Image (cartoon, rainbow, N blue to C red; front, top):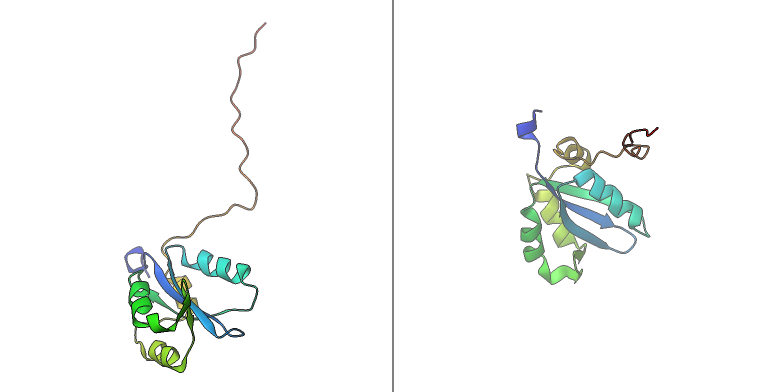
Amino acid sequence: MDAKERAVGHTYVIHYPSVGVVTIGQAVYYAERVEHVRNMSPVPTEVVCAFLGLHHEKDLHRRFAHLRTHGEFFTYTPELEAYLSDRDDAIAHEDAVATCRYTRRRSPEPKAKRQTEVPHRE
């Protein structure tokens, strides 16, 4: 897949099974965002699906406004589950990671400070 085929961003749906909700969000840095959500969650999560592009988030929020519990969180009902599984443009988490155009590069060690040479006086 060349760079032109890679997505600029993704809309994601992450399920919190133990509490019966999903979060519907978007991210340009998809892989990092999903990792952050998982690390910050007090309960296990699973990615239900993702969509190429950021515009899907607003559409999903409007369509399922009646299921909103708070912010980007929605009750995960059979209606929502069926809608997502019927979408032809929904992609698996692994495929979304593979289509990421942007990633934040993290170096394992902090960059060394650039030292400026000071002229030696005699």
